[in-house]
Each structure stands twice: as structure tokens, then as C-alpha cells.
Image (cartoon, rainbow, N blue to C red; front, side, top):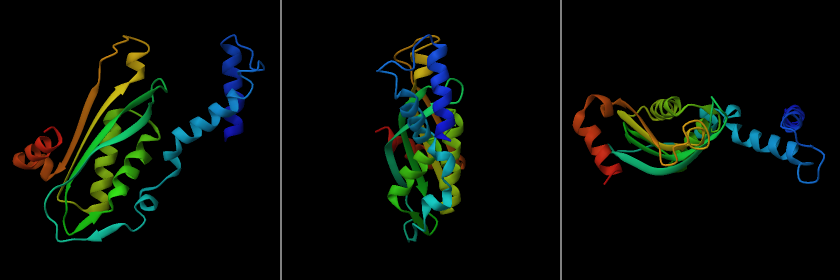
Length: 184
């Protein structure tokens, strides 16, 4: 796969009017192909493998929140980065998820060509599926290079998306508790 990408990156460099054989660019097609493979590695991961049995019985029924999980993704429209953080909350129903698995779920879906709205939904759905939680809330705050580096070039813009499932959607005090804890 990376060999095909190397060839295409070499063609792109040539199409830009550059010499892909000059010293500074000679290894760029290979490096770019490896970088793109890493940045889109989520396509080769699956939720069950990420979870890897790290769902544990627990009597905890109060809200679990992990916030400020950094994420790096590529927008599917321009293949430019968007960078931000993810806040996750869930209400356990007899099971809790290993802490690092939340960050791994974020990374798995972020390392695909994405739109932020869908990324937020994928993370919430995966956590709900893995834990059978009474509710899940996910908020992502990100800055999009496609809006900052090109197009309207708005340097201070950011985007917030949220997905609320179960009690986070249906129970206003639960939703408010989550939002208060994340933004306090």
C-alpha cells in the first residue's frame, strides 16, 4: 500500500513543479506515504480488538468522565488536519471500561478521513456498544486547518460537536451535570 502511495506522492510533487529528485525531496514520497498510513491507521483497527476484554464489572452507577483527550484527524474534504480534544462521559450499568480504552477508541476513529460530526457519533456509539451504559455523552472541540489555512482563513475559529445518547439525551439534569463538569 505505501509503495502505491509513494508513487502518487512523487507524481504530486512533480505536478507542483518541483523536482522529486532534488536532495530535500528525494525521500519525501516515502516519508509522506508512511505518515499517511499512520494517520489513517484507524481503518485497520476494530472495536473488539481495541477493547480487548477491558470491560469490568462494577457497582459504580455515577457518571464517569474523561476530558481533554487530544485528537488529530484529517478532514475528508481536503485531507487537511483538524486538531482538538474530546470529552467523554458515561453512566455505567454494571460495567466500566478500562480508562485507556476511551483514548484508544478516540484514536481509532480519528485516524480515518473524517468529518467532526461523524467522529463524535462514532465515538459515542462505540462506548455505548462496549459498555451498555445507561447514557453516553461525547463533545469534541477542534480547530480545522481547512478553514484556517485556506478558504476563509479564519485563524481563531473552532468547532464544537456533541452527541448525547440514552440518559444524556433524555434526562436534562444528567446532561446538565455532564456539561457543568466538563466546562467548570
